[in-house]
Image 1: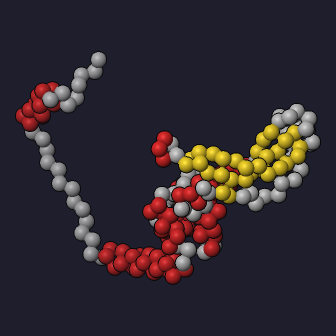
Image 2: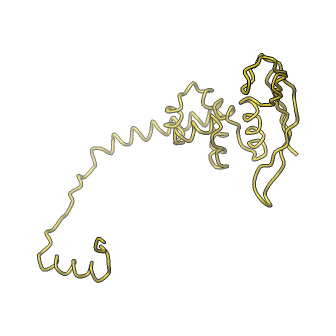
Length: 190
């Protein structure tokens, strides 16, 4: 059974979202939740900070609880957490757009993985893992330089594309219209 403990401070000043009172206490609590469905479901266990309002009795969690649950799911799946994904990119001081250009990972996907909106699949996670090693990033950079150089050399050898069109004879237009009606390619408007 996976278990992830909270890393955030438990007693930071907080306002109750229900009544606005500042008489909120915080305590670590074990949270068990299911991940997956039906026969693939597993129970994951984490410790989260639960806040209790003495004024109205409301109990609530903050955003860090969702992040902890998300990290537990990533650990269970054996993939990098959002913080680790962001860390791979930041290790090379690259923006999301630059990292996307280098790795060919879509910028939108990268942004979703980094903020925890989605979890990357195993193939993309393997690529991210390999990019943790600077020699692999160097290889990708060298490959991109070589491709840019080859593209410039190939420009001189490009044969312009000349589309070939031919006119359709009136007799062919009539035949094509009959065929279209016969096969209901363009049904009449109702």
